[in-house]
Image 1: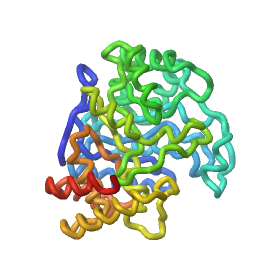
Image 2 (image 1 turned 30 degrees about the vertical axis):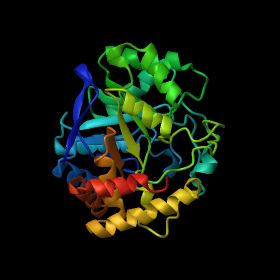
Image 3 (image 1 turned 90 degrees about the vertical axis):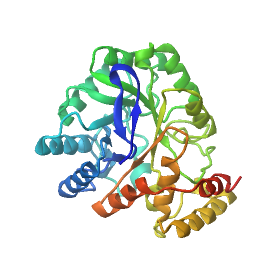
Amino acid sequence: MRYTTIGSGAGSRRVSKLALGVMRFGTDTDVSTSYDILDRFVEAGGTFVDTSNNYAYWANGTQGGESETTLGQWRRDRGIGDELVIATKVGARPTDVVERVENGWENQRNRRWEGLAPENVREQADRSRERLGVERLDLYYAHVPDMNGVPLEEYAAGFAALVKDGVVGQFGLSNHWSWQVERARAVNPEAARPSVLQYHHTYLRPRTDIPDPRLSVDGEIGVADASLLAYVRATPGLTLVAYTPLLSGAYTNPSKPLDRAYDHPGTTARLQVLDEVAAETGATRNQVVLAWMLGDSLPVIPLVGASSVAQLDESLAAVDLELSEEQRARLDAAGR
């Protein structure tokens, strides 16, 4: 395993360069399989795990919490202490309860959401700590911008108060516009500025102009676009955690088509070079994508999911895959 440091000062933590997302643990991924995957991740030297207070509410029509509960119980059963760095999130948990619907996300968009009012953020931090069985949340993200009208400056200050009180080690932002990241960093004291950003980032380049019905009519707020990547590069101390780097299996599974955001000529060009490098290295597409991200000068940590130990092992093998400078140059240039 390879390691890096997130944050600075008292809240900084050394973490594995590959993070494990446990979003579906306790729901779509049963508890026994969840334990097996977590055991394998730790055995391989993994120390960075990601969850949220709302995972996975859509699976069974709940308000979420199953993922945190499963992770917390595994920690207790295995005697895991603070050697594991846990990130969780707040702000996108539904406050109503509906029956499970087979049509997934589209039928979930009109639910009521908890938001980021400081009193809610503090209450949910306490509930997450209880489920996880920890005294302090290592990294606590604002999952999305507040959906109930709370100003950014107000909820940023709420996270700062949690850092000051020792409830939270580091404040993070997920799925925010670049200007919101800058504003949150500007209004908070240095010790409580957002230090980790979590966005969708992968080798293929998606369109970002497709509106998100819940969050923005201007486009897809959760994608690490050029302005966000440039911001991370230009800001010492920031780390990007990249979710869905393997496109939920679409790189390697023909039954999972690419999202419409990737329906443009650049995708064809980048996939061609990706296949060339995969053939040259004897690796899978997934492993080349992860190796490309892990070797970038950008401070990025891929956040991988897994529904089996075999899937996790494929991702773990990418940690030791070294791409040549020439291969990286070709991958970078494709589609430009």
